[in-house]
Image 1 (tube, rainbow, N blue to C red):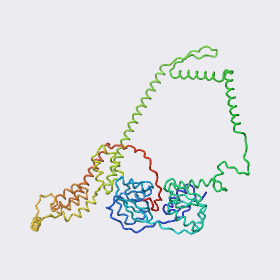
Image 2: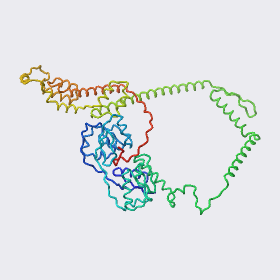
Image 3: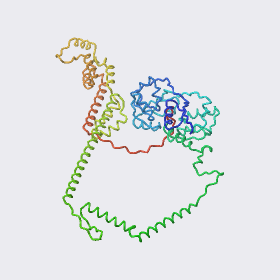
Length: 547
């Protein structure tokens, strides 16, 4: 069994080696590259609809500037990248396979027109609507010549075109024999980059590490059973026979078949002769046994004996009397058992229906709570939009539409508090007053008469109440207080944002009540769609994801 050599950078190298060792294979880890962070300047997050991540390295090496984009929904290429983004506290809206172009097309269909791609230094050209920033790089790791020569008689895993090019440089530079090295490439482009002259070049079924592991395991096991003295040409498993040993000869196949046929015909003839001459053999005995069995079955079921049995002397015997009381008891017992089974079946049906209703109610509540959490965090609904339409679109179409529209421009309590702090100097003073009116206003505010127990109408006190109401989550009451301030005309944008916040929460309340009373619909299973052909790309771990 050949040793397998893993060349990809860490931590992917260890994951690949662990998967292969779990299959009982011997693995050497020789990373050709090391992923290191790169200093970068974060652009304005408000200019992007989402964050495009083609490798988990962007999450690991994004640095402190990465925190500015945690409110953006994530479009992830690959399940490993999506898992790393979720562990970092990001909201993953779209998760695709290893084909980055297909994931990008799906993201555009969902409304992501402007994406920020946190990428590696070595990457494919950027497509329209995507702005790429380098946040990490794969630096070459020095590999001694003796290590490169040790790749002979081994199975080497190539996870990218860049790794294939580096492998060629190392092998040729060390003077190793390519014809003694077999390769497993993640894609056709990676295999082509390695060139020719290798012992074998196997291409993974899809551009993913799991496919590379499966192909490597199959190649290693195949070579383990090859003929050792003939270069693994599998002649030991074929009909090849060495010329120095004559082929063993035996009876002709036609003669053997003829003898088997004759024996079969002779057996049929003997059975026919025995059936005609021997009285207790064959059909007579079978017919008698069948008749006796039918009589017993009829007697036990109904108590009626179709014919009287014969005694030893051939005379009919007297039939046994039928006990009608026993039959009536058995019939009553069977009727009771059938009634009990019907009652149990009805109870099971009722319980199953109730369980189905409870499951539908729980699923609807989970969707509603997830939508509320997304709005409170200020992120888009993502896949929850489709779930809301499927479950609540018929029962509450207006609330569903208002909730989805509000989520397109989410407003949080923190946004309202920051906006209030910004406009506070403008809304506590009147605008458009002359200096005489301003002096008169100041004189009038020196003494304010109000009933005991009523709140103060002073702008500063009213503004303090607005802040307290926002802290308590009472946005509608805070909006009413802002409308009574002298400069309320300057707070139109803030008032609109507060109105969107209130509308979204009211729609959420309606959706949650609908789920609680069990009116949420059950979505139908999605139709089976045949996926498009996979576009061969390099592995996402080295930043070349086809974008």
